[in-house]
Image (cartoon, rainbow, N blue to C red; front, side, top):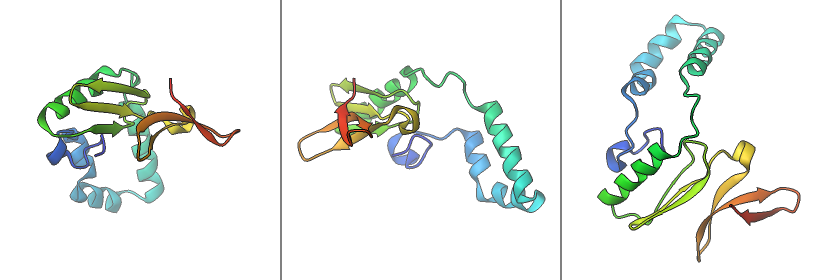
Length: 132
């Protein structure tokens, strides 16, 4: 599952309609025919920076979505990193783990035969440290 809509029909993480339009093959083909690559890329980067939510640090929307998904599907875990807030939430039906942004927090989900946990990568010691 991916928070941007991959497997949305199966798992209730719908992609916004506008994002569906921007990623539709007809739109992409027309966009690429009209604009040179460098111009098209620069325009999309500018558009993305203007439309990106600046308050992407509120964990509640994805926590609510995870709770809803657990109530509709038989899952043990939901793992995402979409809102950039690393955390583990435990619900009666399962655990929601958001690994957050590896690029600046160095957090990831470590799955072993015994456990699945949120950890931080310690590059200096080359080991994992439990997050928290």
